[in-house]
Length: 239
Image (tube, rainbow, N blue to C red; front, side):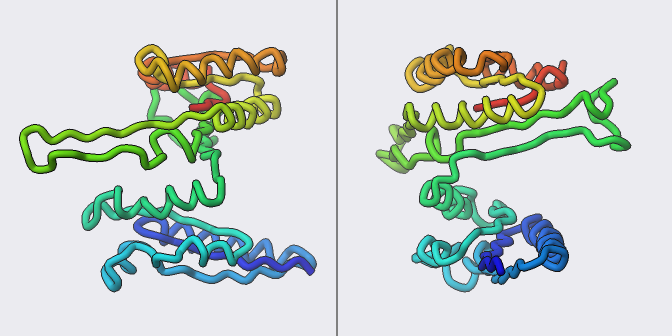
């Protein structure tokens, strides 16, 4: 018997709805799979928890989550009452503590669903965005000085490591091999000449190892335009 203890963290807003629907799917999987037992325990963290305790999650929330086999997360954030910098803090810490480095976001136009882009049909929009989830601007490096004065300023630093860049690119390359064989890397290396130039260099280093994958590199502003103009050109995007 395979037994799994799963924390269900619905969070806020739409997270409550999608988590409930997804739990129904998990229960159906359990019913139809031999020798599978799922223990699902709901964690009531988020804005409601903050109203009662003054925190969006308990101080030891990472230790609590480590006791589970998996975490099933809906969505977090309720900007009408709390700034995202408060409600999203547990999410970023979860990513870093459990090394959840790949944020995988598929975007596909399904048959029978009207397209918001003129002339596009099912099959024209089928891309997966792979976003580095633990480094970059997600590291808490920086600060604010001279608060409340005309000279107030804020400094926010991004961290890009060779290890982090290489593994997210390899994730994208491997996924592209299983799909249509095209990888697009999106950065802003024309303006951010240290961190994102390192991305460019590592992409060039890895490219010979993936000769069967077609490579494209775009700056983020051009990519945003091209996603509207010709979304069919995108397969796997790494950013």
